[in-house]
Image (cartoon, rainbow, N blue to C red):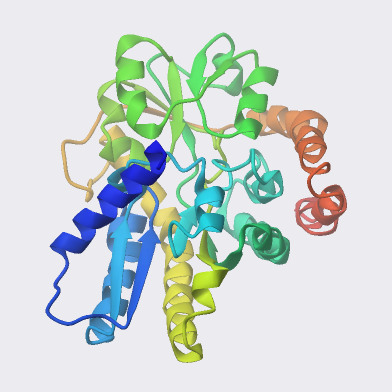
Length: 348
């Protein structure tokens, strides 16, 4: 048994021991959520699964773990999916770009600066994502965003050009390619490693969502918040292992799908407010409702000139490099992008 498998086994033993065993469940569903300590997970996703269990009167048991609770990074998620290590998983396309680069199309930097455009991009590409997930024995159930992955720095940053020469934590090849074009250095760290890296000067900046950065106290070691979606919106897909999914009754499939669709719509609707609240808490400019001691970061909005710079990088480097990485695995990759996301972008 490899290390990852041992971690999963131990995590689920703990989950089982804490669960009520008063009544044996007919169906047990092992669910992997995303990173905890975020409103999307703590206020919507986890409660949704708890409601499914409660409303089944004990017939369905949910074993729910977040990435941090499971001790996983998420980069092997598609392999876990195919092996059936989890029954339903929340997967970041950016994290698994090495295994399936086609999924990252919805989360390339610079494609969207608002959630309306982002949802158009996501919806039009959804059939392609569902098709590609079938390679990993996956059934696509939902697809939704977190906050834009903006830039937290311990040095002033007023423009995209200020990142030149800095070491910046990002996740995913497209964000790293963007930094390379800006003369910056991409550093691959998990979210939990960034606080100390900023504190010790191992990185100058990190890219993450406003609420995650605030909840993990990046505002204590960074003082400039730049509203530039370097890592796009950290979108995720929620995917069932098909072998497991096919064991469920049609009624349970419909019930779970309906609950997840309801949560998906709620998550899209709440996304802008969650982002704004994270900014408020990190800067101390307004009433912080996330708890904790608000920060005093300096906030800079992305400018029109910065968007122009990024657009040039996206069109000449990011999209072509992504197509180049995707095509050997998925020959129709470039055409699918042009026929779907490309048309949405062109219409803006």
